[in-house]
Length: 113
Length: 114
Image (cartoon, rainbow over all chains, first blue to last red; front, side, top):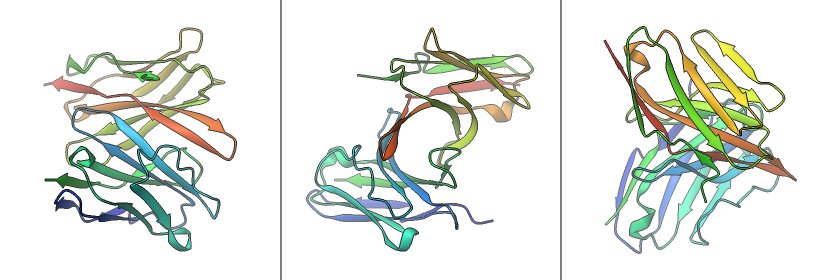
């Protein structure tokens, strides 16, 4: 069956521009997660959606980062006024049960020039 | 402050031998632990997990051991195969009011030599 998909696969932007990253979770998965992996670093948890509950935003690194999940399915991660330190691979995951056996998408590689 | 540490950035093992990947954590509130495998240019893939109420979980060639008193877990792969060559991430989760948090280690790159 279809896995988690993310778009775009690669994004190059100029410093100061806004970017939107999209995630399509596995159908029926109620939990959705965003992570990022900077060069040489481990996975960094960003935000978590569970059903229709308010998201856990505790991992977002600054107020330039925001995410929404429409209709309990597709999610968009938005980074405003991008900075060079935002360059990373942004990974989305979904799971049927909270944090158990998360299925990851291929990621979006963001490069901020 | 790294709450989940994988102190070995890389590990090289001969095919057929055992691979042991280690992970240490500092927060005794973690109640669930997971291992993920990641190939280049792909997202991480869930491998195996263990609840904090257990000390061992086995799935085929993969076994995870948890030593809560030492705040240490390990992933054993036996026998190791060349296709196991990948980066392995250890992750620990803590249930919070209204949510949870997952912390990942920096990863260990495993090389299995044929």
